[in-house]
Amino acid sequence: MALPERGLEKINVRIDGDKLMDAPDGYAEVRFDNLEVFIYWSQGQPQVGAKATGIHLVNPKT
Image (cartoon, rainbow, N blue to C red; front, top):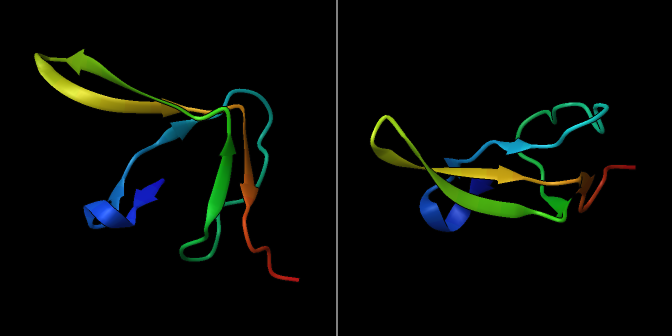
């Protein structure tokens, strides 16, 4: 996930189970199902994590 308001900073979003879509060619706007964003500590530093149950293209090319 890239956040435009944060200068396109990337955040990986974990979705357990089968692969739901192929990686897009370039950037694609997507919608996540049941997105949860959380903070955890790793090696004494705060980190941001995210998980969801699904992903969908917002404007799929036809």
